Every structure is written in C-alpha cells, then in structure tokens.
Length: 141
Image 1: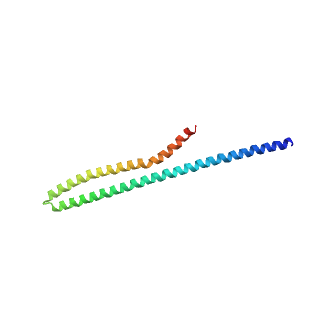
Image 2: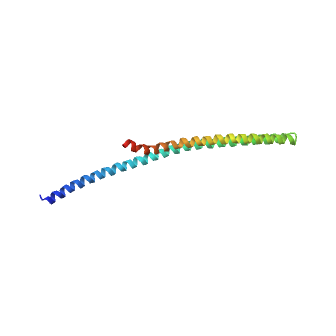
Image 3: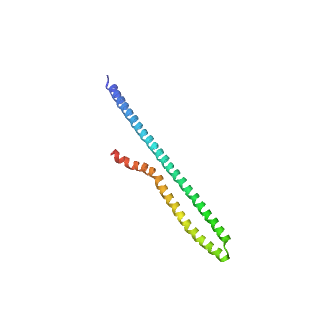
C-alpha cells in the first residue's frame, strides 16, 4: 500500500472518529437543552398553579370585603332613615364614615399581604429553576 493510501485511510479513520465524537457531543447538548426546557415547563406550570390558587383566594376575599361593605352601608342607611332628628342622622353618618375608612384600610392591608405572599410563593419554583442554572457549572467542575 502506498503512503498516500495509508494517509487517506488514517485521515478517514480520524475524521470518522471526529464525526462520531461530534455527533455524541451534539446529542448530549441537545439532551441538556431538552431537559432545561422540560424543567422550565414544570417550573412555569407549578408557578401558574400556585398563582391561580392565590388569585382565587384573593378574589374570594375581595368579594367578602365588598359584601361586608355593602351590608354596613345598608345598615347605616337604615339607621339614618330611622334617626329621630337631623343631628342624630349626621352623627350616624359621621360614625359610619369613620368606620368605613378604618375597615377599608384593614381590608387593603389584608389583600396586599395576600398578594405579597402569593407572589413570593408563586415565584419560588421559578427561582429554583434559575438557581439550578447558576449552580450547574459548579456541579460540573
């Protein structure tokens, strides 16, 4: 066999080995990308589920607050109409206005706390997912 033929055979073997190695590397990279997308999808599904649950709780709380405010409003209206004189009616309205203001502040605080806690719990799965990217190079090293 001539030297040129030997060189071509060696080159083919080396190139063939390189092609196999490149294919394996590409397959590994593709698998890692697929795993990352799968993990991202799971994190988003979990976060969405948590956010949906919290949204329902908040909506129910807002409805409860509206119901309470409406009931108090009708009670105040009834008391004003039953007042014996104009001065008593004004006192009832002033007291109702103060109570309404305090009640609304309390309701706003409660809903704000629910929103804050819900946001934190809903973003935990996403935070874990992002942290896994930060920690991945450390594990590989």
